[in-house]
Image 1 (cartoon, rainbow, N blue to C red):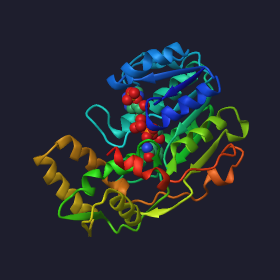
Image 2: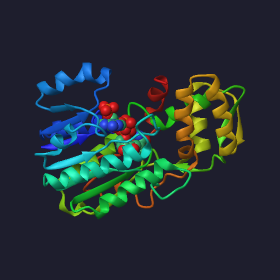
Image 3: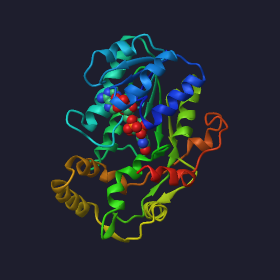
Image 4: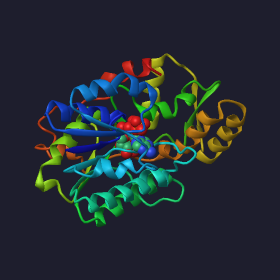
Length: 307
Ligand SMILES: NC(=O)c1ccc[n+]([C@@H]2O[C@H](COP(=O)([O-])OP(=O)(O)OC[C@H]3O[C@@H](n4cnc5c(N)ncnc54)[C@H](OP(=O)(O)O)[C@@H]3O)[C@@H](O)[C@H]2O)c1
């Protein structure tokens, strides 16, 4: 039995599909957001998937969900904090609990999805908590594999959703920082295939893989692509990150405070580089399962039409 944490997410949906196609027994764990719950849970149960509805931070069901599994895949993560679920809680505490229960129940295989650029950082707690989790996993007494994807796209592109508020910002477009930082968007289908290939391959144990798409864009190029696609024609004005933070916190007091606050949380991510030193989708061909990797440009129109 494989426990899939984060099955309802962008990557989780693809991983779940791949596991079911390969007829592998799966248990999924979700807090059960109402849209997903209503649409999918009974269907999944009919297909033989075990569904556990609980919060990995709070509930004792977390331990029982881990018990009896051969492998755990951890895709739980968040780009923004909310009350009772800080980055530390979601990225570090859940991993600590997971490893503790895995040890108790002799679950040896752990595949963990971190992110490209995870590193100690004072002003980017998303990246630093992802880094802390990696350190804890690397010390754990289990057969671990860590994947570090760049920003992922599929049906959606959460990276774009982070700054959708800016795309429509009148009367100018506040480019974050210099706009020269580079990202390497990778398709969730490619990350999911790679992850599934890792599960039962001995050579992937104790390895950390960086995963990026075939094309690198700087932020300015990415913004231009999107604004052209959306038919927006405002001018770019470079705004230092600290000034943008001030602007946003003023705006957050006026309108949709939660939405703006979530955006402020993600701001540090929009001005970093997220490109692979070694892209395992190119170098580990046997794990990329011979599949042709997908390009962001081919899906952009559909992604933007949903924003
Ligand atoms: N998206 C990207 O561009 C990107 C890039 C690099 C790395 N990553 C990392 O890759 C992983 C997957 O990303 P994603 O974009 O697929 O994530 P996502 O769409 O935001 O989904 C997050 C998942 O985490 C689950 N989750 C969150 N808090 C939980 C809790 N307290 N208890 C149980 N489940 C919880 C959610 O489940 P429910 O809501 O159903 O409970 C959901 O399935 C994450 O670790 C993310 O940090 C993402």
